[in-house]
Length: 192
Image 1 (cartoon, helix red, strand yellow):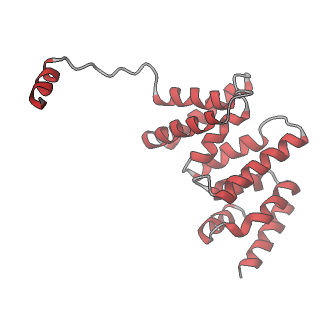
Image 2 (cartoon, helix red, strand yellow):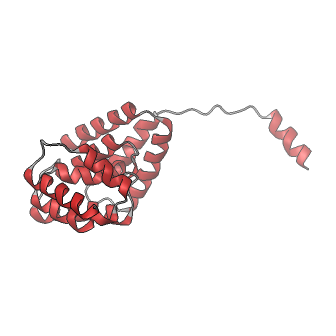
Image 3 (cartoon, one colour):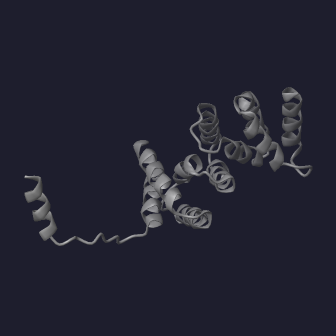
């Protein structure tokens, strides 16, 4: 029976796999769908799975193009900043994960309540270890340089490991906002 099956398949011509869209286009569509108003949360998971496949097969510069395309999609109203979520969670490159998170947190007009909700989401991702690069998410929040972000991070900074903390410290130098400088000084003191 196996021999019959094999010979039957051998006689069948191979169907060439054709792709009508590039992997980044397909991922872009999933990111956009996850960001649409009223989109179910399950679409974020699907977008994240597509994004991880994209990460495995692309360079950082190719994924930077995806981020630029998302910005354009958001600017033209094709999706919302929620489209950045899968990128913020699934990106292994520090600078790109930081940029996606920063865009999600502060790249759009929002009410005070919505901004607080977004900050709480990012803090939750850090606490639960959902992001591939938690240090990048912390830096994105520190980049906002506002007291609310710093206060929220102060509550969870001890959840980060030494390597993550060291990456955060290495990112900031003397030219930071006063709230961020104070936060980093206090954190360094707590570590010693």
